[in-house]
Image 1 (cartoon, rainbow, N blue to C red):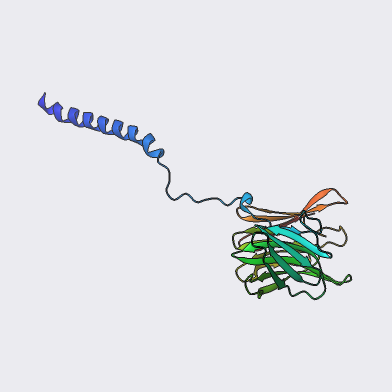
Image 2 (tube, one colour):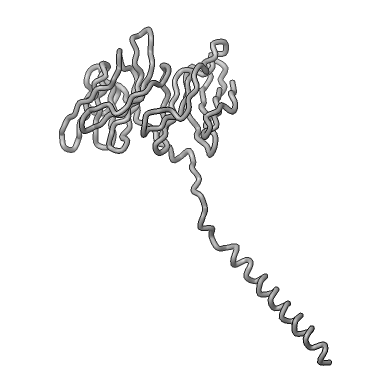
Length: 236
């Protein structure tokens, strides 16, 4: 009888051990992972404020106007910008590097500076620019071209911005004003595709630049790999 006691004891211990392990497994799976990565979603984007000729505060003639965080901005067609502090009543003046008439603009406060996207036109030719202005000194920190008119609504994610114009899409590094990537000559003269872009949808790995085709009532798209900058697909 004794010779059977050891195998029986070992079998008993094994069963107990397995039972203990099986009871611990569900508990272990409920422990949250410490290395979870936050997912970037389109809702985290910020849109610069469009400067328009219609605003609640008193209008100055021949200006585009915008209000940002307690500051009123008057953007004159000759490129001058007046900043009015609504609380302190102080005024500062800046100037962008335009060559003709400013007809469209978007403004944004970036780390205490003024980020400006605008279109410059002489009524025959037009182009757009992005510039960062030091709000203390008025100095233009950097300036770069956005190739084309029909400047679209930019969208900002952290220190990156996606910009559009007629037949043009690009991703800017707002720390330097240089492009991570850009694509020209997208306008289709036969189909009138990409005359302007209406929205930008930023996903996890891809960016969709969406152009509403008003003649065909469709959505034309330029889909770009956000990391490499290569065009994945064009839909039109």
